[in-house]
Length: 215
Figure: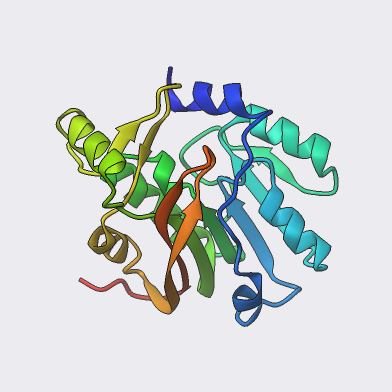
């Protein structure tokens, strides 16, 4: 089963739980901002913003099932199926981008880099990126599965769920490298409840797009 098939299969039942620090977000992003949620799932984060009277909102996800659920549950939202790796919005068209527990679903370094480059492309100069995701854990259950799947995927932290999804928990140095095109506004360690009800190390990041990437 590939990733898209998995998320379509579970789209009606999975509830996402990673928190949105919306008070911190509002310090940097105004109500008139154009906001894109990349990997929006069924739109629960955009709905939070809509209820706070943010109105220029859009969400994309490669799972048709998730988008169909979101359109039924939150009909006021602009939710779209993402058909290609290229984000279907013009250069420098967004004031802010959200990336909630999306990197965990992309296990390859090159694919994560390509996504971040696309996000940089659609963000205006000085635009804001909000990311939350999962970090490496040190408990025995996680260490065992990281070790088991590292030879197959070439990265410690990648693992398979019994139901078929491939997920990744991240080394902190990799996250810092991946997001080096953004000036850090806020970075904070968190502990998340996963979609399967377990606890995991995580983080949230707020950053501002810089005009020139560091070498």
